[in-house]
Length: 95
Image (tube, rainbow, N blue to C red; front, top):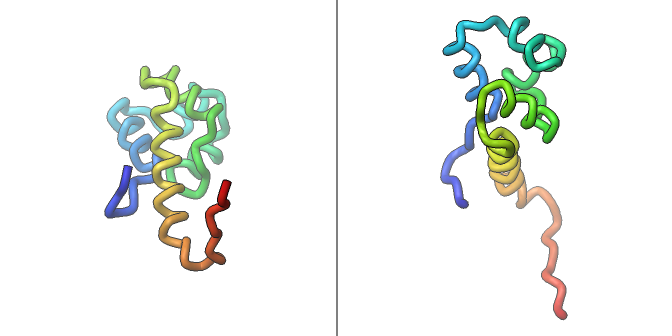
């Protein structure tokens, strides 16, 4: 899937869900079993969603396992493509 723009960090999306639930960051962090600091890092785009976090969020919010991780992967790939010119070109291997 190609993106013309920078896909949202899953933390941005998650912040909206938490707000819609009228929960504080502290309360949501406690509910999913992580520190408030870790959740804040995700919400502010300073930490990536991991597979473990994806499962926690899916269980808490009723999303499909992989939903949050896919969003993170799309963002990571978009950013890597933007930086592709900063690294040496890799030639395709011939069989």
